[in-house]
Image 1: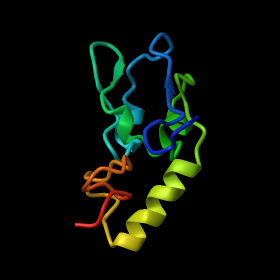
Image 2 (image 1 turned 180 degrees about the horizontal axis):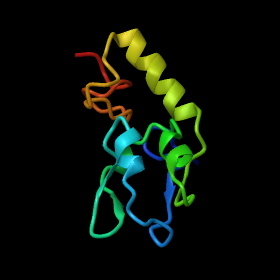
Image 3 (image 1 turned 90 degrees about the horizontal axis):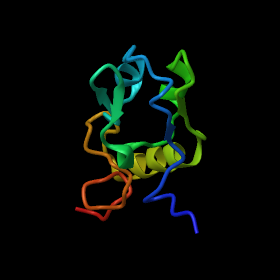
Image 4 (image 1 turned 135 degrees about the horizontal axis):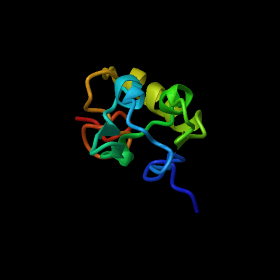
Length: 103
């Protein structure tokens, strides 16, 4: 069964990537980082499926079914009064994430 708290729909095809770094600029959670000639997926568990990376990739190296993960994370963060731009939200349900336990 698909666990939306631990898995996401982010798919990356490094063979298509030519290292423009647009995904690193638009991803609010640091999922991507500059690599050697290509972008690397360094924190896939942080992906909230907003789809900004896929929409800004000029060669369709990234695919995301945007929606559920992002919406759930935003709702959870709003209910807990957490800042989605702080970089601490991981939407993994762990303590400190937007959908994690109360602190």
